[in-house]
Image (cartoon, rainbow, N blue to C red; front, side):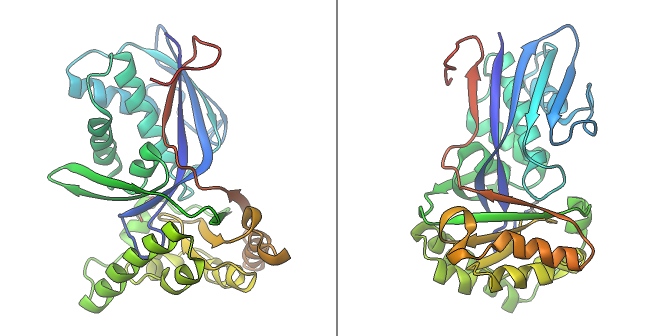
Amino acid sequence: MKFIIKVPATSANLGPGFDTLGLALDLWNVTTLAPAKEFSVQVTGEGAGRLATGKNNLIVRAAQRLAERAGKPLPPFHAKCANQIPLSSGMGSSSAAILTGLLAGNTLLKNPFSREEVLNLACEMEGHPDNVAPAMMGGLVVSTVEGGKVIARKISVGVNVHVTIVLPNFYLPTKQARAAIPKKVSVKNAVHNISRSVLVVEALRMGELDLLSKVMTDKLHQPYRLRLIPGAVSAMEAAKEAGASAVALSGAGPSLIAFSTGEAGIPQGDDVGESMKRAYKAAGVEARIFRLGVVSRGVEIQSADYADGADF
Ligand code: HSE
């Protein structure tokens, strides 16, 4: 049995929705899996030459975790990964690997767990649900964890919403970015974020970018993280000057996500991505631009044994 698992990139937080909001983006890691004599992983694209190629690969570790939970031995497999999601970028690469591994294990073991249970396991491994939930479900997803179980709902996004992600060539591990956040927050700042999170969801749902421009601000994590990324604050300003309605740190960073109307994130002739890239360059940091659509579908599993691919 040979099968393909496709997982989209995700951008978590969306400003005020820390550990709560996430958006699935049209950039995919595509992994072809086939039973083999031993575990091996071959990577092309993002992460090639950097990701582990054996048992230590996160895909294999996640599959093993699921098998342990199911109390069944995991048959070894070969995974061939064609990766588009950059590593350590704030674009959900670890969530994509975790979901790929869990779904690979679940498929190979003949689905002992439901999709909801797989999502719970993914959240347990990732530590928060805001990347894994939209990667699994697609679209804009609001999620939380209650009693160890993910509660998540998908909300459709207005068609005129375009995303530009700019990724600086700067290493900021999520662990370090999380450690930078104060453990206590004031009620005033909590209220700032609670109110705006709800309004961000409504703005994206309606494609109301004027509203988004007013409410995509954060007091819980961005102020502490942005100062760790050279050029990030000026890149955010540059995005706004170029016509972006709103900009936020994507996940834990270091990438930034800008929202605009118009084709491919290019509002009224100006280019949001290029302006942000120039701002990073002025701070001595090279950056890559990703102009992306929002995807309403999440993870896909297809049989590779049929030419047209069958969802199951
Ligand atoms: N919500 C998480 C964080 C996302 O901000 O740390 C990490 O990608």
